[in-house]
Length: 238
Image 1 (tube, rainbow, N blue to C red):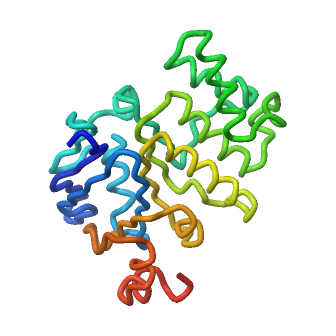
Image 2 (image 1 turned 30 degrees about the vertical axis):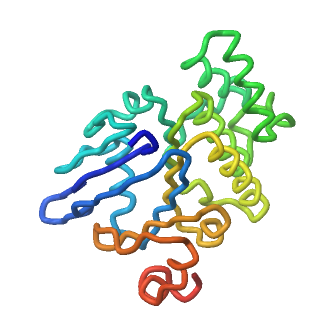
């Protein structure tokens, strides 16, 4: 059990008569990277919101390193050492890249360590050329990298990302791939994503959601070649 980062048991989310997540059992090991895929309405985003504390599940349990976190708010989950990046950025556009990352680091470290951690992240994510630029002036791909820097500032052992490749150019996706691989050397990751090329570049194990349930969970190559997944859930372009 020491190598289990996150587990759910019977995780269920109902909205009236609609079951968005239906008794989902899930396990993520330490330093594992898992992509969650499926069409709109499949339940993957609802599952993500339940484990990140954005929604409280109707039934079931969530455990992080053996601690039950069911229904915890996101800030309380973050206090365990969990980094969360949603599609709604938590940044300050009027401050520089350096200032945004430093403020995130200062939440977890003393002054000296926050300075060191900020420089480490700027180097890790190749942000040196834009470190003094206001965040509000950056291109979308640059902002995405900065947001990952904010997540990494607390040295998380588990990182939860919602569509980090959304809206990125081919060059940005290549840089994002390298960044995520580097983060995965330090933390387990769960990534909700639609971009199949991006998933192929980073994933080993993929969990496919359909109608609120886990349809399939396997190596990315077997998932992508499965006829049900290809024809029904990923489409002919997968």
